[in-house]
Length: 167
Image 1 (cartoon, rainbow, N blue to C red):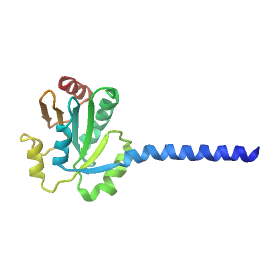
Image 2 (tube, helix red, strand yellow):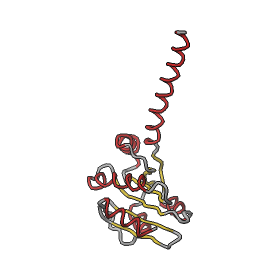
Image 3 (cartoon, rainbow, N blue to C red):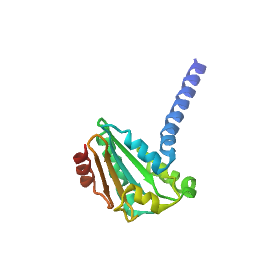
Image 4 (cartoon, rainbow, N blue to C red):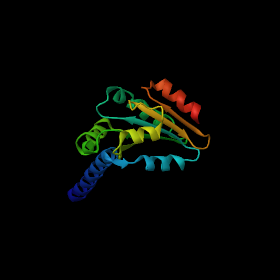
């Protein structure tokens, strides 16, 4: 009887450990993404509205607005919305800064690190109006022909209104 209880208890512990680590592993999954890959992904989006936020771990306004992007995706999870968080940190900071930051903040949205070497080239490809300052956000809806760029920090109300007008 005691050994059956011990087996059940050890299975429960294994299950709890798996659940604990599976959540944190998702948060740690930061992939490299080029502008070509980003453009390809959003161009295949159909009726999905893509909200692409450009941010960095060292940018205080960026960090302040990240919860709004998390809330937007959670609020509209049953709609064709995809929030992508695209870090502009240096690639050398992926393991030591970006992944720990994402893990610590428990970010649920997909997080990428921009894999580009020439800032001016990728800035111009995202938007000719972009000075390079962050935070910045690109809203893209292929079916409606919408591609809007915002070089600003959003409040949640502004972000939600912007999303609503793009779907």
